[in-house]
Image (cartoon, helix red, strand yellow):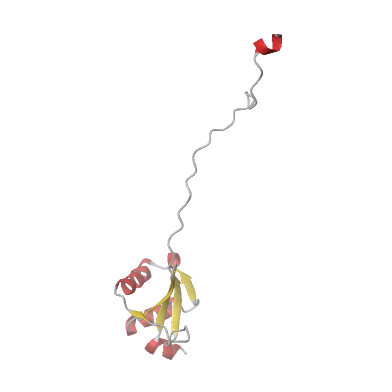
Length: 115
């Protein structure tokens, strides 16, 4: 199986709009096979900078391979990169702490109490 991946493998890039398949050259396939030697799927955040640059270069070169009629690539998949947009942290307004000396409930005025 690894010979087929080395000679004709593709890299699957999981995007928010669905999977895309990229065709690397022989040296890139060998490097990617080493990257995916223990895992079939990796999030982009765990890759080393050199691996990220390779993925970005393959992505920018538009070396995409179309899918076959069955919905799967006609070539073996070396691995899957989970290329998702980074989650945006929700910024919440700063809340003031409730002071312990004052009551949260308003006390009735003294004028209303004497009447």
